[in-house]
Image 1 (cartoon, rainbow, N blue to C red):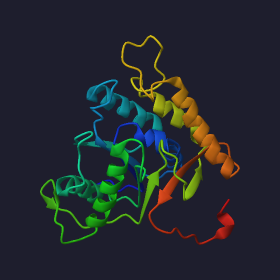
Image 2 (cartoon, rainbow, N blue to C red):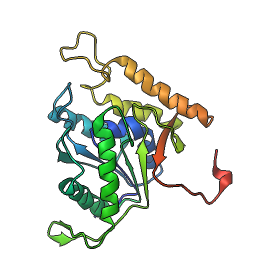
Image 3 (cartoon, rainbow, N blue to C red):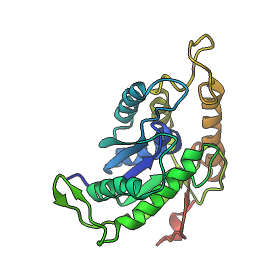
Length: 240
C-alpha cells in the first residue's frame, strides 16, 4: 500500500491546483510521495460536466506528477459533515497514511470550501481513534492521524500562517490549472455561460495573489496556508 508524504484533499477538481499546485510540484520534484483526493466530481459546476472534470483532473495530475489521484464522489454542493462522509475520508486517510494533509480554506465565498475544511478536520481527528473500525478490501485498517493539517488560502483573502516559495514551480502550477479547459480562460464567443473563474482576468488575479504573497517573503511567487494549531521549528535561522 502506498504511503504518502503529502496529501492534498480538497472538495472540487481544480481546488488543489489553484491553492497548492506549486507546493505539490515542489515536493514531487524533491522526491516526496504526493497525492490528491477530490471529495466531489464538481458536477454542479456551471461549465463542463463531471466527465470533463474527471478527464481534466487526470491531465492536471500528470502535469504535476503526483503519485495518485482519487475521487470520493461525495455529492457536490450537498455533502454534509456527517458520519457517512467522515468514514469515506477516514478510510482514505488510513489507506494512504499521509504525514501532511492540505485541505480547503477555513472560510470562503464558496460554501463547499469551508464545509469541506471542517469535514476533513473532523475526519482526520477521528481517523486516529482505534475504536472507530474501518475496513479496506476486507482487511481491518489501523488507526492513523496525520501529524499536520494545513488549509488553503482561496478566493476570500485569509491571513496566512505560513508562506512557501513556489517561484521555480509557477509555470507547472499554471499549466495544471489551465488543464481545466472548460473552467478557465474561456473565449469571448464560448457557447457555455461565462463564470467568475472562466474570465481570463481570474488567472491574472491568481498570478497576482501568488506575487503578492511572494513579495511578503522577498520571492517572486508563494502559496499561503493556515494552520489550526501553533507551528514550531527547530532552527529559526532557516526562516526567511
